Length: 110
Image (cartoon, rainbow, N blue to C red; front, side, top):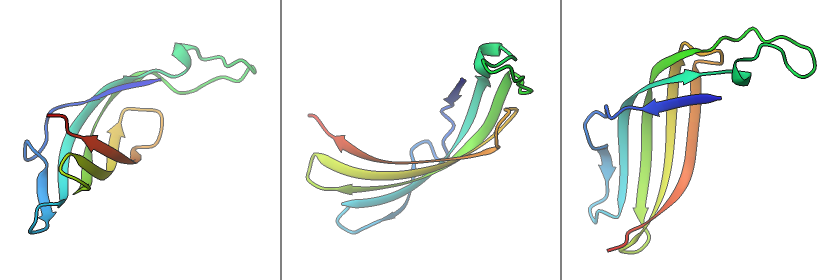
């Protein structure tokens, strides 16, 4: 199990608008953030159910992330977004680089 948190360090504080169209219906933004957390493997138990032994250790994680996000307005209150994030973490037992990506829908209630 990995517990991590992303701190509020984003440069600039709001995502940087890299590109937008003249009508402001499409936005491409980028951000940078810091990460910190704690990793535990198999609840701290070294022995697995099949008798094999884990060599991974528990420990603190630290690193950063770079995010690229695209948003487009479908209507006045509905936004379709795509995002990608590359995280780099040190101190853990797995690879350093972790890619995340997703698709979302924002509904603005007013």
